[in-house]
Image (tube, rainbow, N blue to C red; front, side, top):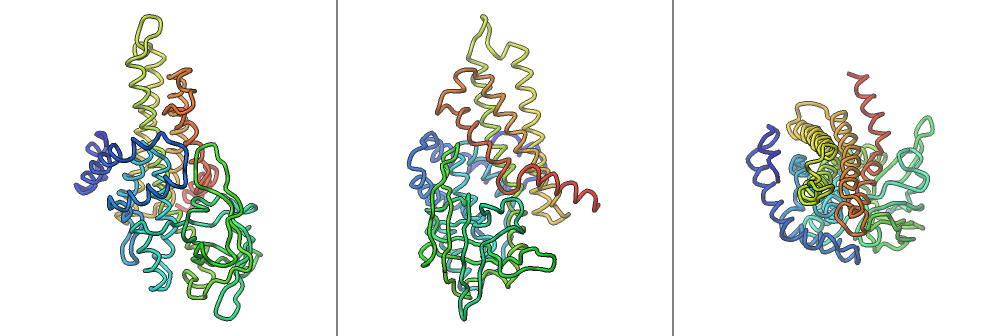
Length: 383
């Protein structure tokens, strides 16, 4: 890590040690592999195993009686995203896919899946989004109907990270209809080997990503594999996203920090019109804007993480501010990095070109920028 965590009051000595250790791990193990964009499935599995062996998955996958250390989660995501968004995805999906299970599944179900995920022996997925239900979760059409000692799930899910490589999925389905027509949602843990479950297609994205569409056709899930009580699905989904929201901003900060470092390196070596780029005032202006936005984004992210960890306040607004600002700022910073690099920044496979493709999704997944603004305004009006 750079000097940021030494200069700010959000961190304990343990966090500072973790940041240093993770930075060394990333430089040694992740960076040499980061440029490769082929064999995404195999590399995703390798990253999960590497993260487990390094003891890092325990910061994303926690036991029933232990809270997630959000500052640690953010520090790790920032460091991983600095080198590889695929490694960052491998890390955070283990947490997103197990959070509801760790909090609300029956003990034997919880221990079976959470233990395997934490040890890197099983890959997790979080199955909420559907073809007709993105930000509007109430529009979910996938159903689960009780049949004796099982629930029968029918429907499909879209844009599911780890689709095709996950060993199990936390699935949200409609089990009834509330007054007013909103869906009553319940959550289930579904093994990828369950009859009636299938991967319909793998989705090609602008940045290499193990993602796709899954389907359920008469998929019988034992009643004991319901996560929480019937009707708890919506609150479990929202608690999962709320817990991890600030960490999306942290990943954005890692990508933006890499873009700034690459820009500084390029500006200090590339000459134009007889002078280094760094000596041109318009380039200096860009660099000044980039570091200012990056510092502001990191302050928002780690304020939200600190508040979540210390329990001193509700953090819905703070977490949404962090996610909104950091992801939007990262997009601007990386765009400026490409501009500073000129034609070199457009070369397929260059660091800033890769970042340019990687960063775009962050403003959409786990709550779009528009949804974050609605949350911020709603919380502000309540205050």
